[in-house]
Image (cartoon, rainbow, N blue to C red):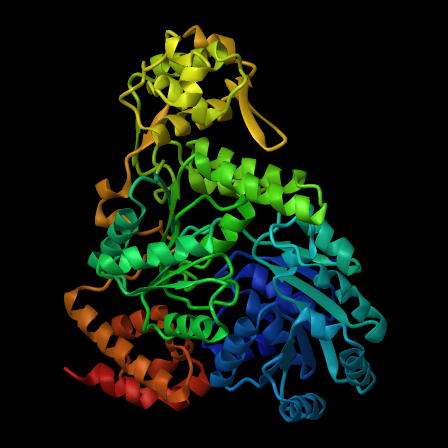
Length: 627
């Protein structure tokens, strides 16, 4: 892969653009290199975590070169919010989608030719139509087209968690715009997916830029699911007591689950509503806008909600069931803390989750005729990640091919394992022996649920009819919950004592390489329980520091912060945009801490560019001066 031009990343024009438009005085190293590639018209694949600033990487080059960038974006909500945010910054942008009338679409194309807009967002399906290809060819011939960018590029890979066939056709744009640089961007891509993106798009000698997958501002927790609504309500209240004013997203597996759980959370006194694809378009839009406008605190949703949600101050993401893959988990938890401020990701887990996913995938495969092996592998990888009981940050980074150095004594400081929110079962060796014996005495022919029923002393029909109530291990672990024992079995699988075998959607357990020695008590086995976040201190709500001190406000500063939030909401309502588009929470905190007294001082606050200073500077200075 060729080198970028020397010092191109420090081009004064780039620094001037990010300061004038976005209010930044510096870029992250990966952003610098990606922007330089864009300015030079190079092909590039950039993988940066959510909140890592991918959007700037295709927004800045268009501004610097004065040429148009066309952005393939998968969701209307994502396009709409980006356009509104850019317009507030004084940056010309537009989106072409099904909600745009023909006359407005023609006006957008005219603006593309006359240079009054720098970006056009469009869905992949629209970009590959003959009509749009003709427009691209004209823009190219007129010297107006500078680059083609693909957002959420992981959707192009069949090895990814969100494969969309229409993305595969984007390489057709090469023929109508030869020589134009193509840049792909995503937050989630394993090495295999990265290779597939490069191949499927036909990227030519691309600069491949892989940022750190670790999100140090996120605190990851896994908790055994037993009282879902109670556990979520408790987590939301912990954040409120810690002074967090952001939103909460709760992910469920089914539409029915979202509606039932949302109602339960309302009964707990929370402002919550459900979102799923089965609702009317009007209802979905209403919930989405309420959450973006910060008039709804908690949205309970299927994974249909999220990719287009750019709200920067989501402080809590809860998975009420295990997600279908590590990639999906990384993508969905990435919606927390997009502004770089601390946030929490709570996974409520039951061993039965993977079986539920496997059944759904099996039914889908029957309908489509597709081979489910790849998706089933992803589910088992997710289950193994949970069961490993090692630092969550380290495990996630290593899954995406990156080592993460963690102090073995201090840990990461931002996950349930390293925060000591798990406890070792003092009877680990004995419990492991009983579980292994139960697997052996039932002939290694049954799954985890049946093994748990046997050792807990069940008198159910399946246990009794097979004579398993007469086994010596029957009832020996009656004091343990089924969820707890299921997690122990997962841990035994991760340690190689057991193997999970799935044939025709039925799961059985059999001995692994060290199974016999564990059953005989010859292995120094350790089994751990999540304590649950109820035992966590308020400080543990927060992620670890991200190369800087987290901004913590005292009581008096909180009063000023809330005053600024109220002002921000009022301005947002007047302009018909989400509050975070006006200023992020991080910018409001910086205003509270720095207390600028004039426009020049305000312009030095991160996140305030010239356009926003002109639009909002005076009213925020006035609010800061009120006592």
